[in-house]
Length: 472
Picture 1 (cartoon, rainbow, N blue to C red):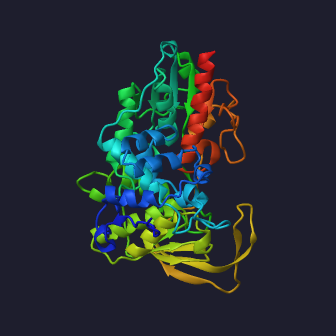
Picture 2: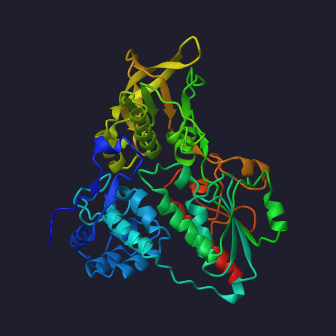
């Protein structure tokens, strides 16, 4: 048995920083077989306990070892709707790989020796995609009379729609933007999640009979009450978290300071990196700062670096984070890729104030050094400012990537929909039903910023509850 993990092939940093093509190339058949052979096939596999939807990881990896890739694909699809997507974007080092028996107990994330479950999932998912494997449909005539409205076409909405449509329930997805996919399209760059992978999953839903209505903002175009009046038996809210958070410091309204939403949406959804071929422009600078330590911060930094390269500017993009690298919530893989490509890091640094020029454009960021104190509510050690540590960073463009909050338009239009102090929708943890009977919710609108697979887990709970009610 091969003891060392099989390293996945990647585009070289010097080449990939000049384009938006996929960085991770995935396993070949030979590589997948070698990596799958490392799996111990534990009697009591812990890896599945780390998966929010409970994929039978042992089972699908075994099928790969037998070269039965079709069965491997269907084994994953028993629990996960989007293996090709999750194999690319799931934070496996915090979930299934961290739970792998080859990771030492107490480790904050997976060890290098843990099985590369995500790359094997991607291999099986891409096999299904490339061979147009259709998941068996269980449509039953008793469900044909029911119609469900799904609000939002992100991972939660797509997953819920798929679960319902396979039973024969009519599903209409309402999307406020002009393209479907939600955060999978506007929040994740194509060098991490190519659009053809996302489009494959959306087209599959269309084949199941799911309808998509774009440029339709529920809460404005129609209220929840009006959707019920239109004949929808149930409604699922997968609105996501699309409201940006800001730092609340001086100078934050200066020109060339972007919220992470605007920056990534312009580039990912509206192809601003191809301007003027596409009509949406995006600014870039010689000294770019990204504030934050999550995946959106990594994505923004890597996008900014590529824009600098495409515009012939020096590659000078820096991530500013108030804790150390070990506390960063971003995927270890994304941090590694960012560093390989040339992104710089300033750790234990707290922004204090932006300084602009006479025309109102940002030019500098005044910062303070920090040290780590006692743990806060997140379990991570709280950054404590060091007195007299003030310093400056040159900055002619900044992206604020310090978190996202729940979308508010539908919530504000529906006062009877109960929310918590964070404005997230309150739901029954088992059924995902909200305070309004017949209205369910899942994804970031419920739990705050989370992962694709966590959103799918909530959507599956909601769809099961809806199907159970229709079965009565």
